[in-house]
Image (cartoon, rainbow, N blue to C red; front, top):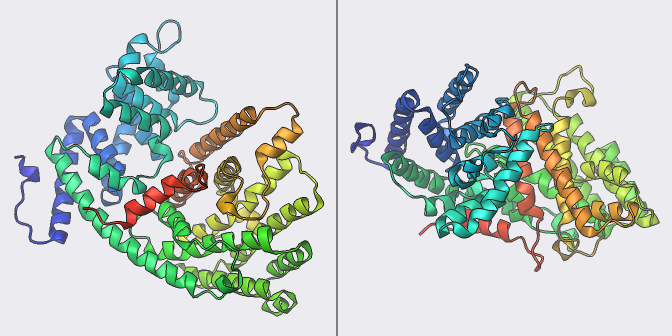
Length: 523
């Protein structure tokens, strides 16, 4: 046994954890000096097992070193498709602007990808994964995605069960657009140990998963307690009451195990978005909704007396929760962002009211107008502004609200567009409620007579793909967006399909699977 992994002098789980972390750190340093590809492979496994927070600084250092070496002449001369693709993905994930032209090395004289690559299963899967980090204008990655996708699909009938499963996973659930945190359990159950470092990482992942389960179970208990004690839930019997589902947004967005306080605060505005949405969609009449929106814009307790009882209770919950979040940020970071938080709620209610006016009048907005308003009414801007401050990022004192968010409004808008469009593609009877929702697909087909549903659907999927490319671009260095906020935004985008793609039974099977994986103990 390698001396790096041979240390029997451990007496408890805490000692085991720190010993194994040290073992991996030492081994990773050694490997990085001797075999750069193997170092990338280990980093990839670490990230897929949700252990990157334990090796963050070391991973950053290794990737920076490898990025600098890619700038040297002839660096890629002897690299195969798998190595180039893996390095490209890992570096771009961390914001390094690796040129897509590195894949031109795998083209033949006819400017097409080389025929011999068609049988390179490992390389094709790595290439397909890499293409999901593309930005607009990178035609080579569009070609690579089509080439790798076609080859993997055609080769499927010739693969064994394990290979075909991996190929389908690559095609259907690419790494960049999925959350490792929600797949750790299945990764552990399927993880094949071949080397000592793999066994060490698997042991470490089991320890961390058990610890994380305990944290999440306690957070879940607190979330349910908070929600059940809200008086507004008693007044709005027809409103959605799904605090566990909404809590999954917090887990997904803030995947770092150490961010328990932030997760517990973030769940509150997320839950209230759904509640206020139901007031506009299910409960309120237009005059009442107009009045409610005016009260939210004024943000004064003295104005609530003019509201119906259920709206009064809702506004007070909204007011007290938001004011409290402002105080939490002040206590943790030294400033109170309440002016920005209440403005975010006002913008959201204004957007909800605009939709209510459309539905009440029967007028159908043009698709561009609908989407512009829908980006705000998605709730994403309001939630992410709360998240921005909860992460400790400050507003410039001398700036107006628009200036403060100039650096982050692009990525917020892209994430909101992804959610709005995929939500509209989902089941129209969201959670089988009685309210009405607009649909980008519906308005597009009305505006462009003769357009089939399938064509409209593909158009929306293309828009989602382009929004993802915008997100990728906004996360590349140099970026004015704080790194912690970047990663949280990416995680929110990754959550969207899980939260909005329904099956024929109006259920969210992927979400239900992940809830069980997180809260049910492993055998």
